[in-house]
Image 1 (tube, rainbow, N blue to C red):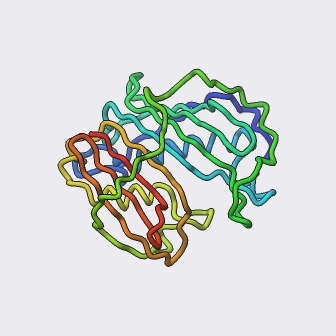
Image 2: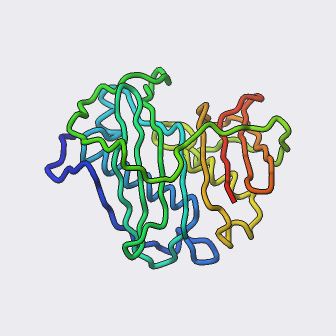
Length: 245
């Protein structure tokens, strides 16, 4: 699609939190927080001419590699939140995108994401084929206090769950949707940690894609101030999640 006449290098979008997105506490689920952030990023890419549809002309798609989310408080059912997004860097096959969520004018969450251009036929990274120099970049405007990092996976970890990838786990790129990994792990966390909003921030690393009927194992390592989950296929790490408490 052509670049929208409404395109701006910083996009703000409002969402009303509905009951299907909420925990029993009435607060927004962590998975739904990520969905709202990424829906805003996707709309920004759409109006800027670098969306999934645009990229599929060249068999390309954006895939998430790393993500850090810092949370002040989770919004509640019927709250209207504003999500703002902009790009810190965009060159060759990589991009760093920032996102923030506001409630009543106050910032309640910040997110930094690292994306790579992925060829959906060869399943390999490659250079972005689309024009993108109309995006103004904001390398010094950070949405989080700390940037994303490589998660340290302790070899002294406990196997806590195993599953088979099913159709509902997959997205339009035909691999496990990034929020699904988070959902699998969050389902294994003590409910009091979730309901009492003890998660101050979390990071995710995506290392290898998972496909339909893959057999995976979820591992856990708990310390005083964080919980680290890792997901493996055939003993190789595919994903890591660190919950900072």
